[in-house]
Each structure stands twice: as C-alpha cells, then as structure tokens.
Image 1: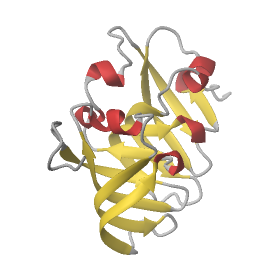
Image 2: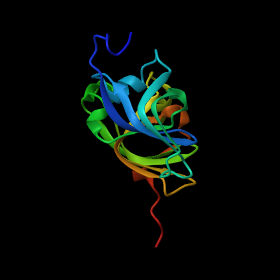
Image 3: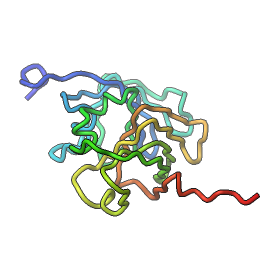
Length: 182
C-alpha cells in the first residue's frame, strides 16, 4: 500500500540517525505513533529516510552524498535523535503505558557512542528487564547528549534519542558515580 492510498495519516519528522559508520540526517515518515511506533514495529525491519544527507562519522560535518530516499535496516541503527520530545510519539507509547514514572539520569555506551541523559521508567531501575524483556528494541533517553567515542567533535544534543538496546554495551546510573576523594 503506497502512502497516497493509505488510510493512515503520515507526516515527516526530521531525524538524525547514527550507524556504526555514518550519520544520516533526513526526514522519516511516521504515523500518529511517532518515531517510537515506526522504530519498534516488529513487522518491519527496514525504514526509509527522505531527503537524506550522509556524512561519515570521522568527518561528521562533511557531506558525502545527498539522496531523495535512503533505505536503512533498523537493526543496524545505533541511535535516532529527534529534535522534539513530542516527535518520539504519544506519552503512552513512549512510557510503555505507565503514568507514574521515575526519572533516572544515565550514561550508556554502544561500540561507537556515549549517550548521557534521562530515562523515564516505571518503578525501580531494573537493568536486566530493561534490556531483555519486552518487544521494544529502541529505548528513549530524554534531554540527551550523544558523543562519538573516537570522534569527540561529533556531538548531538537532542530532546529525545532512541537507542537501539541491542547495541548497548554498558549502562550506568549517574547518581551511583563514585565521588572523588579530596
């Protein structure tokens, strides 16, 4: 079914998508469920990015190419940065249906990136269930900063970053940071 004949309402949202080797800046097509809806849809493993500008990670500001349409495999995406929190989707979807949530300042890493921001989770922090249970592959981190590990000049500040949990190597709560001895 094409976009022209679909009964759903689609809209374009600007997104900054990071893979292990590239930064892709363009527009993704979403429904009323926002970016969370398209990225966590288990029936589709690919995604299209319109008006896509590509840059290599080691030169994040140098444009490599520009395409009307780029197709990407969702499992290969490390993070998707959105400029507005609302672009992630309705609160019920973003929060997993929970209304009472706790905020946890976190630092997490993938093989290429460090992300620091706030996760909103129901109840206490449970790393194992967060990483292993449920069907959501992309986890939201709010008021986040993404930095490339080997290229510190690549820094993206975002109201919401969706991080592919299959690429997460480590997660730490910032309030458990050891205080330096004086």
